[in-house]
Amino acid sequence: MYITLNKHKNAQLIYFILKVLKEKYACAHEIKLKLESAHISYQGKDFFPVLSQLLLNKHLCYNWINKKGNPVKYYHLTRNGNSFMKSIAVN
Image (cartoon, rainbow, N blue to C red; front, side, top):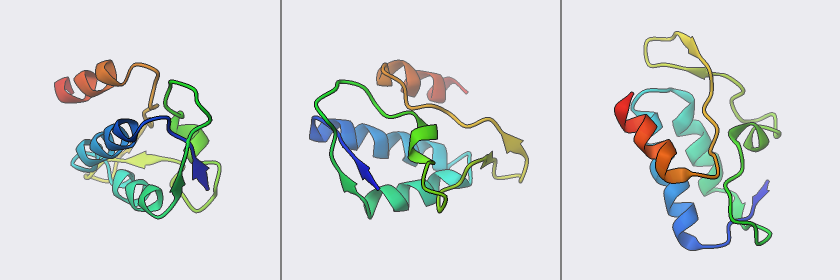
């Protein structure tokens, strides 16, 4: 799997988001490990891939489950990463 990012800070943002999600959702840790082992690149566009695009490879989780084992909707890594992080911090 290749994910392309135009700046190193974008990669740091994605890892930070997954680190935060890991506290609440079981699949975040697995996705973070897969991203760390992947080649990260981006195609010059200034937005983040949505989580569903990251899940195209079937070895990644398709559904989030919280730490209590209950299913939840997965988050998207959106164009506005700052708002995404704020929404996580609030929830």
